Length: 462
Image (cartoon, rainbow, N blue to C red; front, top):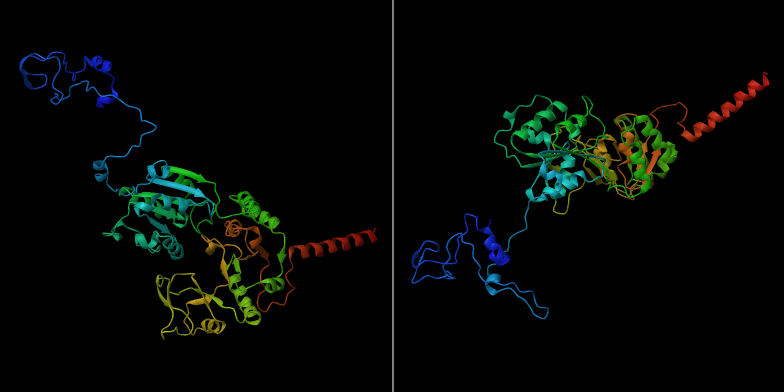
């Protein structure tokens, strides 16, 4: 036991009589004293105050005084001179469970703040964020944190087997935040996590069970929930700012695709025909499609409308390199030279969008600026993962083959308000001479008229 005697009453000292460290000091003998290790000229009942034996309990005669209300207290100059300007601790707060487990799993919808929570918690320890695409890694770096794809970190192309010898003498961070880990195949995800665990790396996996599953294999949700040391279901939604849209997302999350599409169509009852959509469309709007074939067909028709109705507005061009290794490199932007006589260059990754003039867009589509450019009016729903489309940008959902892979839930969860969403029919195919595609309301009217006609015929026949 160690304490300052100022906080111990005098009577309490005599209660420690049986303690080994207690040294009675009522009488000290004459001559050499074995109690206080000093020499006395005569017997004395008290040792000198400036000579105290080690580990001796004693009464120092100190008293406690309450602070006076009319007094002004200030620290001694010696104390101020010894004050050290210590920086704030960079260690994460211990009250968050993520700091106490080596492998954690945060499961929640888009915009729930899973990745942001992990980044802010470990920001002082310089964590590394894993992403499935270079575009998401670029967005993470813009938030002031190190980020790269897990393919580049593990030096794995996804086409061959992975072995630890690939890592060589690579630097291994102590904290890793793995965003959208569900896109990593289960066997390799297990291998990567075991390799990181053997090196004492703390891993926080952030994912959404309702995201589109992998093309092959099973979702790693159940496996990682059993394998991880900590699991948490995040129910917050910081992206959506409207109660109606929040209720729609909660209703369709983790539901069958047919239920998702039915609820989405009930929330968005109006479905514009293609001609009416082209009239209401503006170049700043974004179109979400389920298939690349429909995306390309829609963009070709929208480019014609852009030339006719918006010749002075810029055209979005999408960087889509034939060689996918040409990412995070300086790319020449199509268009005229800049002021110093040099071409405009930017560091781009796959699916980055640049705006060019109408004439430059025609040249890019003709291949004058290479084969790495395409129109950027529309993207597939699967490619929109991780995007937050802010108001007032409008999003047009082409209602075509959405009943698979949780695409309906993913499409409606990209925006902040319900009024940003609109449904539109699939664009007609080139050279199609069949009947025009009708909206759901128009089909209901046609079917109702046919039913009335059939009833009239049955009645006339008796």
